[in-house]
Image (cartoon, rainbow, N blue to C red; front, side):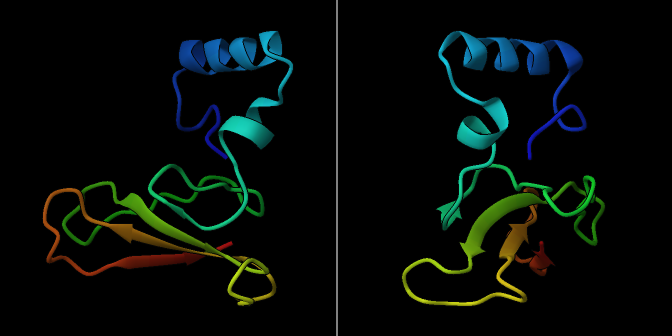
Length: 100
């Protein structure tokens, strides 16, 4: 999930406070929605944050999340998520993959 490791302490606190004021859970509703999605931030629900860097050294950004058990009926790993990362500097650099 997008958490303390990816947000400044102040911004994380503001996000949690806003969610609390609106009666929602920050990590379940705002940062870590289930299903297929384009962009956004990956959840790190099985491991701690794993830096995904391009071979050029740039921090890769999440391009697509493919979630198991959604339409179409697809199973990634053991009912996990396949995340595809791209280089923000040069789109011709190889994709990086991660499974949670």
